[in-house]
Image (cartoon, rainbow over all chains, first blue to last red; front, side):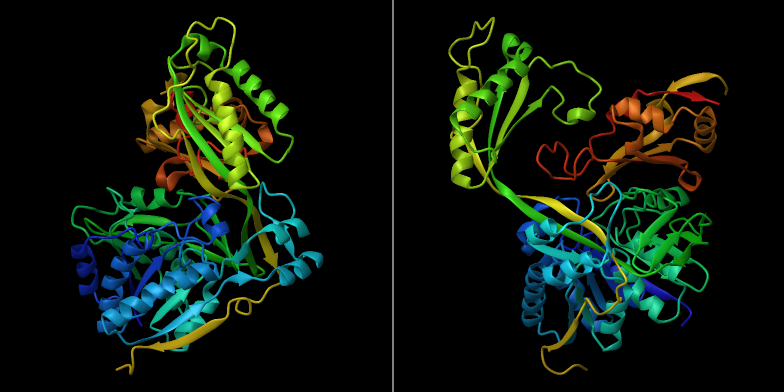
Length: 452
Length: 109
């Protein structure tokens, strides 16, 4: 095999892509279609609650196009971090969409489902054995986080996906996976260089973001060869340049030279980028440096229920005194509600609202947007405390008050909104001394009758 | 170019912030040209100390500054004040923490 051509339709399954770009990609006779569906960017809620951050109608549209084309050409489709967070409940959600599309379009294929969830008992034992260490900025793991996390996933490496491909799967639905895996698994299985395969995968998982103008909703083609790879956007309005591709190595990563993953790190210190033709960039020199196998664990735990109230003020005296007024409201809430678990917070837009403690500028705008927030053990309790805090602030007396009818402008009636259950990340650790495949069971199933 | 000070936004086409995982935030400054990139690196203004002072965080919270010549970029990574989305969060994606860098005066060396 001289080269492997890989089609990346979209940066996140459900973000969409132009059909023209996709068809242009299919004309290149790709050997695989990869889609990374996952991200922790939208925050802890989606892993904690077991919801997808993408919309099922949008995911279904993307899969209709992708599965139809892949089944015609009999090329594998590999979906990483299904459902966004890649826990079993997310896999169930995405699997049902795959089943619906297969039934509707009468498609036949072998589907592999790879789970990536870890049991509390297993992790507890591994924690006791000292096999779990924190990532930078994270406290050491204790039994408490393992107990409180609603579900805990680990990022699989290449090996479980390779097992599924070896077993004949045409559609691989993987739970939480290291981002480049959906592209790199097949070429490494075929003997291509893992450094180049992981690097091209790292870029392709964001589809056309590494082109200019960049887009996560457009298609990119990766061509991996023995000692280099090529990247080309599949929309004639975009092009890859050495700068656009190199700049992507910075994106969302803490260190541009070393990207750590299961089984080793990608070393980009010697990587070279060169314009190959008008639209295409050639890349070489990326190296994979093996290390003892470790798996990144992720978990989120519930912290209560949130209610919010959005309001504003245009009164100069109110704005001048806002810190004291907030202190007054807080102490009034503390006097009236005994529980200490309730969290009361005021976001002040126009005064450090976006940056909080990182904000160097301390001046206030001529009007302030105020988001009052309460997080309490139940939704009902959060509603009650918010209602009290809101009415206290509305009528709060402060020095120099002239506008005695009310301190707040509300855009909505009702003024208070239930925001539901709240989660926080509590596990972001590495599991060491672990087999690459054992925690990630592969289940195969034939969908839609006999495969040709 | 020497002994000259410039605002970062006058020499960089991209100045952005984004989460690098839920516990870190990273800033990318991509310069308009290789000479400008090299000149800012030589000027030596973009240090851990500068960033710590600008964002009012202890020096050890700035975990790395990288000069990445293939993209003519300087990358700065620091610990988030709290994990993304925790109580007190103001910016879940970390995409709006770049503004103090825009007017930072840097030496051109």
